[in-house]
Amino acid sequence: MRGLIRLLAVGVALYGGVAFGRSSFSGLFERREPKVVVVDKSTQTLRAMEGNQVVMSSRVSTGRRGRETPDGRFRVQSKSAMHYSKLYNNAPMPYSVQFAGNYFIHGFSSVPSYPASHGCIRVPLNGEAQAFYNWVSVGTPVVVTGQWGR
Image (cartoon, rainbow, N blue to C red; front, side):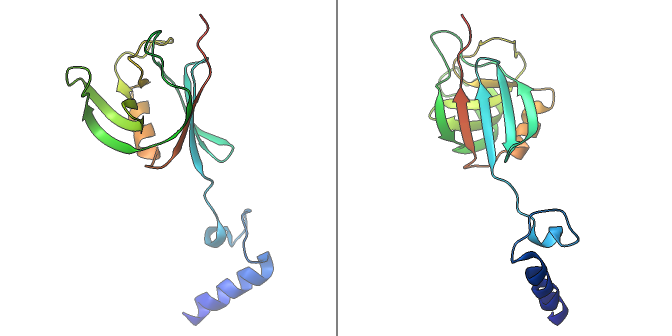
């Protein structure tokens, strides 16, 4: 225990208390950058980011005309590996991430390159939906922006 305390004291003395760069001490002082999800309706893309680094990117399909996905800043409210829609005949919504009321980011078999959903954000079920579901956490910020060209 004394050795660990001494090692920490040396790290603090050498790196001024906190070090975020790469060094032999980086494992002790490294900090994870905050996560954020950015959905751009103009390009129909989702980017999962940690700080300024894109860690995952996917094509998506947002809400079609008359059922647009709302713009704004939200937070992930809940997650469910298999959610069933309360609005659309108990439709299965695998890898669901609720971000605002009845709006979800979820896996879907059909993800065209244009807005086609009832308002949710569809992510391909080819592995991207599950990877995103596993990466995102309750409380992660979600930013929805842009407008699909008409």
